[in-house]
Length: 191
Length: 208
Image (cartoon, rainbow over all chains, first blue to last red; front, top):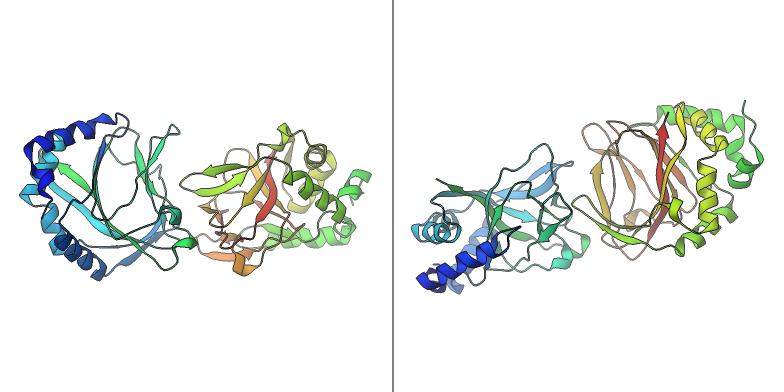
């Protein structure tokens, strides 16, 4: 299912270099990650999921769903684990996360009471999304520096969260209309 | 009984300086829910409010972006060179006005310290739910300098302990709105959803 370009040994070594190049926020963005047919199948599965509203006004508002079987299988496949392992240079136990659905008025806020420990995030977007709608996953180091990740369909993103690095999802504004941003976001659990 | 001085009469609409009105407002402030607040329409003498809007339109607004908010704000008016804005700031910090606010709210307020800035919310701008509580803040206030209606967004929503909006305060030109800052003063500014602008001068009065 994974684009063979990413599984080529020489390329994987380059991916590792790219991942480490950004010292403050080690990360990599891998476009065209899955073949068109498989991506369309996963996107359909993501759209069919039952999303349930989760809301704590002081902290977040969004809808979320369990990961559909087809996506969970891809994320926890040996090929996926091996690829991620080579990029971040750690043995992978599992990818643990869920599907998120962000529409108008949804957001997450930084939360001093729930500081995320350093670790690795994995994000996979489904469908097109315009940045002017908000809803960008943004990493902030608490020192005034922040990086907003661009949302692109069929693009896998891996991010290493160092000390103090926290993330939030920017409020989705009225320009989004009835559109929804669907994405998988989870933690890479290492051994 | 408090006798309003000349400065108070110059700035504030006479109806808000009558003892009878003040006594009613004291009661309303205390009884208002989800927490004490007041909304005073046509608060300043109209020419003063118009002058402030004109003065504020000449100030520079800077974009403010974070997880919690997206809007535009001026620097603190203390650093402005605009005479009208500085006079307004001086008036808000004056003994007469602070005593007036103490009288309305029953709170003991500090002298000499005031935060005041201009804010501008355009289409898609918002401020999400928070409580404003920071050491020393006693009253949060806003003088609206534009008028919106319900469908425009931009309302100041006051929330109860369960974070449910129980009061929507819609901006109106020359309306002075303020509330007591506390651990339960949860509020938000609803997103502006069209090309109307929400313009205000706002800030905090501090405790003693």
